[in-house]
Image (cartoon, rainbow, N blue to C red; front, side):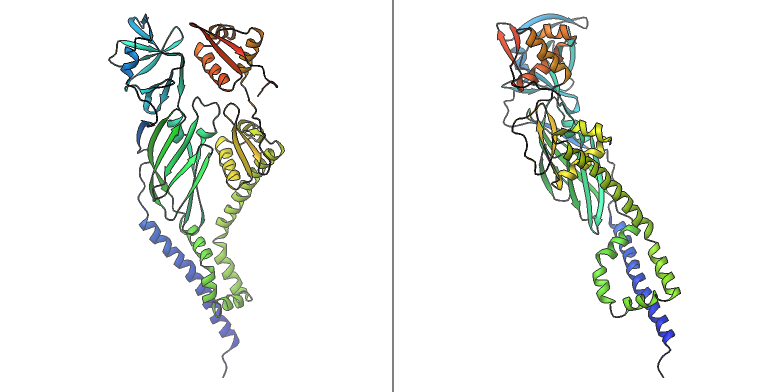
Length: 445
């Protein structure tokens, strides 16, 4: 006697649900194993750092600066004490480095000063005090290297696109900052899993894929244009995605084998089940467990694409726009903008380059960069050029007095304008005079 059709359908219904539930249970069990094997969290503040000079530079002991007889010396009263000040050449710079270190950089030689050396001001001019030294160094300008802020001013963004793929993106805000005293040359990242990658300073955001969650030691090696290199490390925890999310990823990756295995029985049973009221209810309840997670991902994805579309549309209609203009017009946060620009450039929807006085500008992919760069000047730099056009041959001291600025501020901006070939500096004996260089078009912001 053939079996009752209703009994057969109920049996196949239960078998289909069993196969589907077994797949999810297996994924949850696999979750538990991953949690047990993942590394314990490590204090993210644990860092190790070192500072060094490029082997290509000529290194000098700081004591040679003090003892050089060709330098001018004078006696000053600094903080109530009598000091012998050695005036370094006008092209010499003092560079602020990580870990509160200072260095003297001239056109030919470089010296990292001893720990505890500080910058003070005498008659509005920078003076360097060195521990255990009665002599002080007089310099024309002090600049700041962005090496330390490079790793401190960062944002880590983690995503898990598929099972066994933990994508970590690092956004370096220091690369997006404009008007750096010293530009960065490039950097190398040891990701802690055996992978070491080198990037140019053009890369604001970089990404790496890990195959397992856990805590990794990242080592950053970054160099600036003056030849200084800073190596620092920190620990980063790649966070496990959670049991429910891991189960969804596992089922998604293995849905092919599961489908093939249960094609003859399981899927047929599930198909038959949905034609019964009880079967439909059980299947919908089972899948409803995953719906909140699925809906959250979809909402975030739509919002993500909306903001990125705004940024891309603004660049497409305003080719050559620079970073701060996008920040102001689109109205997003700094970190959000850096992230989306990195994604757009990585997917080759946009391209960027440094232009003029350390600006970064963005163009849609496919549009050729203009052959001539545009110099976007600050208001102070425009005032300096206008004054020199009206009164050529002025000294920097006269410019500082007329513009009500500190001498070191004028000195720095004159160096920038001289580098851009917008002004010329002529030395006559001890006096330095300044002139505006005639241009075919007036540069502006």
